[in-house]
Length: 118
Length: 107
Image (cartoon, rainbow over all chains, first blue to last red; front, top):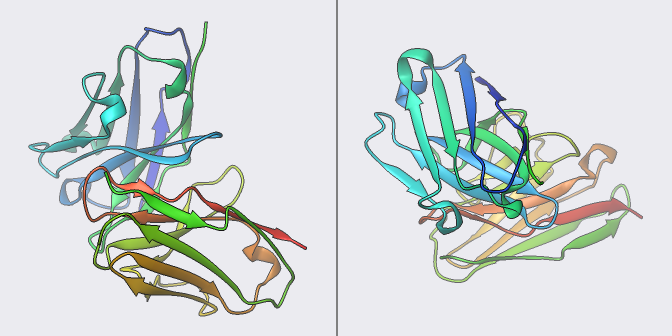
């Protein structure tokens, strides 16, 4: 079982940017797809994006397409989420997660809170 | 997008009760579904994968069934530590989607 630790959350004004990071240990991150999932009080859990092992494929939920960019640095065992043009409905706890080969997610981080407010 | 309709949204039950939570997919997803338990302030924990396979380390009172569009999570005999919120997740096609959640409360 791996460990994932997110950082980079905080308070940001609408229209601003923020970059989340997730450092993983206990497994070779380059062997797995990796994802970001967020949770808001009003909408529950929402899958945000994922990225292939070598970074050659990315997928996003429509609500963040064109604003968020997922990336990874396998040499640093790290996953990132660059969030631009932030809106109030992006306010959430953001989790990074390791895609399980059996589907879904077995390993999750503890989450980092992003608050978009003026 | 595939919509996951989870029911009920909340449920009151007693220790020892048998409870069932359902998820319906808006289109067929084979068995590409998992069930997750979440407690306040914690990340979700996977209980069931591939619709009916029990995650290692999860008590056998949890079971999953279904395929295609109809799925069920059953807890055969509720224990105090089972009071939490439960979610289904489909990973058949993008965007992956979660059910709205079922909050299981103590009666």
